[in-house]
Image (cartoon, rainbow, N blue to C red):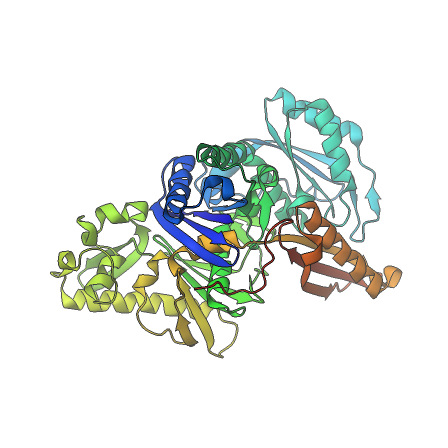
Length: 525
């Protein structure tokens, strides 16, 4: 018996799963205090199902809290930045391409230190350990509480970063230290950015994880809880405290995984219409397609794993503004105030949900409250909603072939017509809480992304090593070794590099140890 929860900007959704079966679901407005909203949502599904709190085996939670905090520049710590790469990279200082406001918020101080590896893990320069110790003392004496350490080619060989952390903690035992090798991929500047972002969230991550634990304790749930990350798999609470950035974009990912589960499809377009935004992504083998491009978060370039998701400023609460012939829907939204402020619920503000209700196809609120809307406005608004979505779908497709579209999210009531470029539109049962279901079925993953010299190791040995590392990482994070599946192997030859250099990316996934084995993607309905 497990509970899935997804905390969004508008609603907090919860679901109880008994093995493969959905027992009870609940949707409630998100509250300013995380623990109150989570406790309310979980309390409602427990009451609705008649399940005792003591019978819950696991709780899985998805949250947008860390993403929102970084984008809104809220609750961030100044960071001591240590880059181990000299004499390389001296010309581009840390935070050089960051927006000025956020660079000011997190840029405590930076230290450039000699050391690093080559692309194949061989030594480039010895680590200057005295310089690391001096940097740690400077960070400590400045009153900084967190540090980000980035080494040259550290995803290939992390030994220098590990040694630097050991030295830093010897000088300042209370520092929260982020290692870039645990987050980012090849590309030192983007990886450093990701590490600094993560380090700036150190205090908030402890606060949020503590709030989750407090909410469960208040309900009498003693089961372990896990938090979903942005590839559709899980992290332990302790891991989230160390690496909160891995939750970025986990909300859309949860919805996509939930849509796969509910529809039984492993390859499809997924459209998740929420109260504020619409997220569009592509399922590939049951998991979200990953972005192959550098991703900007809050204006900062990063290269850590992110789903390829297009976010549109269209949702159930999107404000409708008509000025003469001009009609605009979104991106401003009523958010969690939808049920207070929208016309359909007795408020005074016209939003997208009101248009769908007046159009005769949504079944929420009170239709009599929107009966006086001009027919021309309703018709134009409904067309604009569908046009916006059609444009988004077209941008996410990689070829002209029609593909199935799975529509989920509480705002899915906005969509009435077929979308061009799709073969069919599927709205599965429980579509409104697909995000919570996606969290509840999440697995544990392991990943390797490094460069091998095939001339030295041979292809087969390199692949075996990479797969072994990914499997070991998954088991370390709590995976059931017997259920490990190889999801993806990608080999990319690196031109102009010696030794037959090839970048290998491997990903595996498995059920949590002790969890019910997932025998299919479809729930009982």
